[in-house]
Image 1 (cartoon, rainbow, N blue to C red):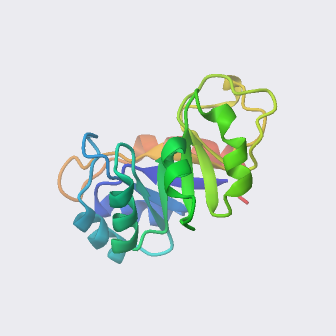
Image 2: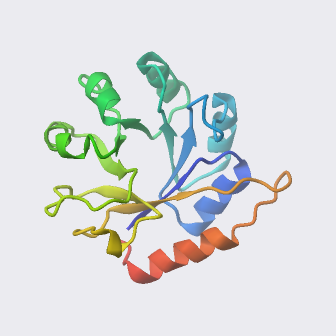
Length: 189
């Protein structure tokens, strides 16, 4: 099981994720999102953490901006929606997590076959999935559990970062409880 901490906005959260053994941290570059982080802050954070991959999440972002920030920040991958992926990744080899929704989940099998740099799919909803869910690699939201109808064991789980209560102070207790549940119920590969 792979672990990803989403919406990282501070060095404290990034260092905590690295110490907890997370595989990925992601930074939100959607300027309309409350968890938006400025690219230069991401550059500083990534300099101070090791042993973890940095992913840029680009929803509502122009493809040229995505490519520029991917290169400028030397990110390990990007997280984008399927439509953007089909347009942006045709001729590039960028490691990607593709966010699916109810409308795109059944349209991504062809993309999966043709993408050699696909890290995983990210499922942004918790309704029942098709009975024969066709993916070997899947992140799922931390709100999803076995009662929601997942037929295959997930590739990974995404957690939302918590915000600082004061500079450098974050209460990780609830997040740690959730992580421990998943670590105790699924083997890491």
